[in-house]
Amino acid sequence: MRRLSAAISFVLAVCSMPSEAANTWGTDLSDMWWNPNESGWGANIAHQGEIVFLTLYVYGADGKVKWYVGPSLASLGGNSTFTFSGALYETTGPYLAGTFNPANVGIRQVGNATINFDGVDHATLIYGVDGANVSKSLERQTFRSNNLSGSYTGAAIYTTTGCGANSGSYSNYSQFVVNQTGTSVSIAASISNGIGCTYSGTYTQTGRMGGIVGTLSCTNGGRGTYRAFEIEASYQGFFLRYNADYGGGCTETGRVGGMK
Image (tube, rainbow, N blue to C red; front, side, top):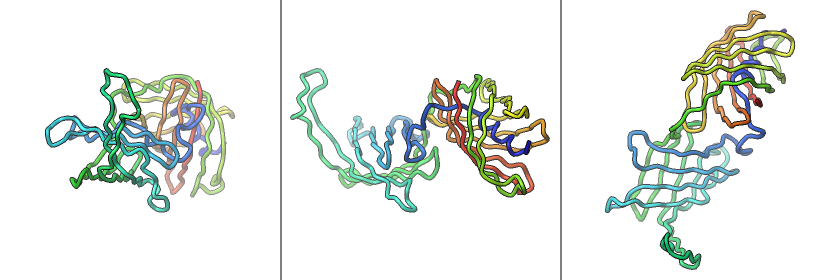
């Protein structure tokens, strides 16, 4: 078997996936976001299609908590696909311990907000509140890491380039076993034609997104390095994207999903 088909096992080996991606529009940006150097305030982002819903919790001039909401920050499209912008509001309403009357909910636009996501895990938030302008760096907030250990069956779609006769677009499936202790991940993959591959690497997680960087080695002689990213885990499995480098200009990119 082509050594490149081994890369598939990597992906398969690296993770499994839920029955569907969380957001069909693109990378799912939903998460808790914060600035780790300024613990105490942050942003919740819910992402659906080309819209992100921003909830911002900060502090006013009196040091008391203030909540603002951007319910419809829209993608600018084009080259700014991952830049979202829209109105920012402050709301008032009935006391929490009383009877809730929707007629008593008030809303006031205080300014605008723009979020530019310059990667899967990082963003710049620019917003204004009643003339006070703010620019902050954000990243996904992690409070608990996933463990990918388990046995999976998965499928991958991938493209190889610079690999001679092995270049092209392919799909494949594999059985694999993942063992994770802390940040150390070891993956044993068994491809459908009997080739075996081992993937070793280091797992990291930012918010709900995971990543793995490591090396791969296969019984057919295939060796190289890989990087898995946008690992989205659920109790059913995982979904991820990946890059692999076999040396000599031979590279591979793809996506993989797997189920327990």
